[in-house]
Image (cartoon, helix red, strand yellow):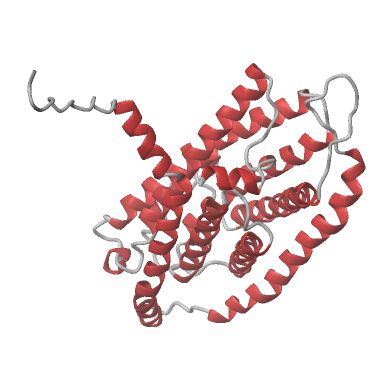
Length: 351
């Protein structure tokens, strides 16, 4: 018998277990924390280059009006008042009509807590705001003749930056500031009213990214691209918020199925196909046109392409989540909608 035992070798860890551990460590929330830090650092670095643009505007006879930024203050107040009206007044009055759709035998009231009422109020606010936003923005786009061929218009988005800088209309600049006000209010909402949500950092990054995109698009006169970022996202947000309101008010599935189908189709068309073609591809081409004046300010605008790419990735991620919800509802008969019913305990489990 040998004096020392042979040391046993540990079995190799299967690759699928390694991937599972890596996936748990690299969650969407943690990625978004990193992207938030990166975005804030960029915002500080980009300031001198954005100031340099003002001198270029003066030399080319283009007037930039920083005073429009003051519209953000009353805009923020109006957005906050609309949210509080929806969450504190409208949602509580609809509370007696909330139903538990998982019960098929009778119209059973949904066990409602304060957080559920607040979230329903937030969806009511979203439905009102985005429906108004899309209506007003479509009117401005048609009036200013900015509609691209991908949305049944006459403009070629690949030519948008050939004439730059170009002064936007007054109505479009005011709309830009109203949109900026809304997303600042939404960022405030995440910190003040929704900080316990399991998708807190994802939504903070989403709204912070939108604030940067809207703000820099306004500053750099790239409004021809900015309006389509807004229209492709706001339209789907109408269906998303309205569907969540309908979910707690109706037990039947027919209207919910129609809304979900419209949401999936419009999301794939607007947030993926049109967004990538009209905004992402066209802006990439724009930067490399030899005759494009934008090339000399590439550092000042370097945010756009990476930011728009990450926004497209977020849209693709959420699209996959919607397909999972549709499969759970229509095939497996499950009725929970992600990010609406999940509470604080769910976030602790995910962390």
